[in-house]
Image (cartoon, rainbow, N blue to C red; front, side):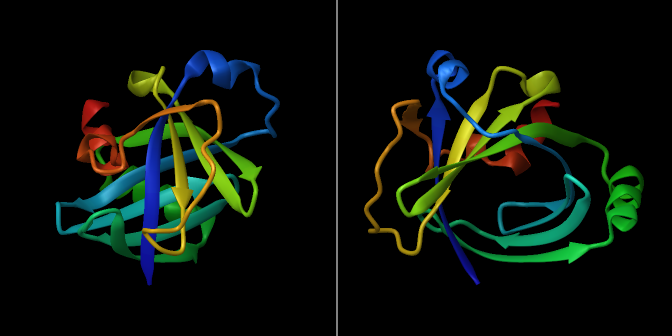
Length: 150
């Protein structure tokens, strides 16, 4: 299955004053991390996920995600990952889309990224007032790269 995703930086001052739902803590680590393939373990709330992502071409890449038992996800992160990312995710509906806004913690504190998955690369969508720069083509904002800053 293909993932087509835009990434934008978020203006922290505007983000702080908007009305938003309660966020959900995400903890994730990487078992394998290369340009061609990423294997990620994620705990989101009380669920665990195993995700495999392929190389990005434009803003599209193959993605396969599977729910796994929470205890397994916790054990895999503690046993097989050296570093992990902590962030709080907010899901913000806008029109027919839902923006996922990640507020990073720890060494990445201060970074706020908004992601939007679309059906096709030419799909039109409205930008919220709190997004700024489009960083979709900048690999420095991939979680697999950000984790190296931890």
